[in-house]
Length: 287
Image 1: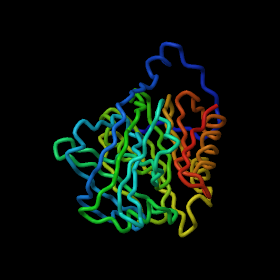
Image 2: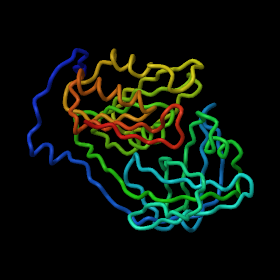
Image 3: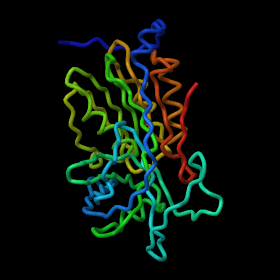
Image 4: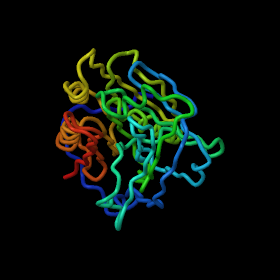
């Protein structure tokens, strides 16, 4: 069956209050826990992506129901190899006199409660502490994991789901595709360096997958995602758009979707998973 698609800018009628309520995301809070986990396996999945499988009994009770959840990875001191957890005060704020180890946010790629394992995918972008740790990671090493503090669960009952992101978004995109039901439809626009960096994904949903290649350009320096989105034919109907990439590009993509492609602002979630020239940045773009 041929599905209708749309390229032209258009406006859509405002959804009813009942529909907005039915499609409202669910926010789930979790007890904040800090875990010491051990590296069990390291795999170079693509030239620019390393998958580290962590394990340990402290994964008991770990939960990550949202496909774009974030845990805080706490890296050992590179000079001493010691793992030191920070202390948090009221409201989860870092205590003034607490040690400040290097920490970064990452999406749990896959959690196996029975095997007590947690997979984390590292996109090798800038030569920061996370990339350096992943490139030297070996079985037996330890790392700290905090959270997730909360989950943002997006309903699946849309006509289709639009997922857009760069290498840093691939773990969340892969999780979402794996979790969508068979009656769902997904359109994915993903940026990587080259065809060798394209990630194999599995999904029961009807999937239209489009890759954008940087061809050696530095991440965050091209507008390939935006140019590809401008010419991408989307199915007709209500959709949820999820965007995650370099912050300025995430903002531009969201602006295009809402202003020119009929995306409803409440059904458009855009995040800057990183910001070129900044360390440990994470931005949320909203109206």
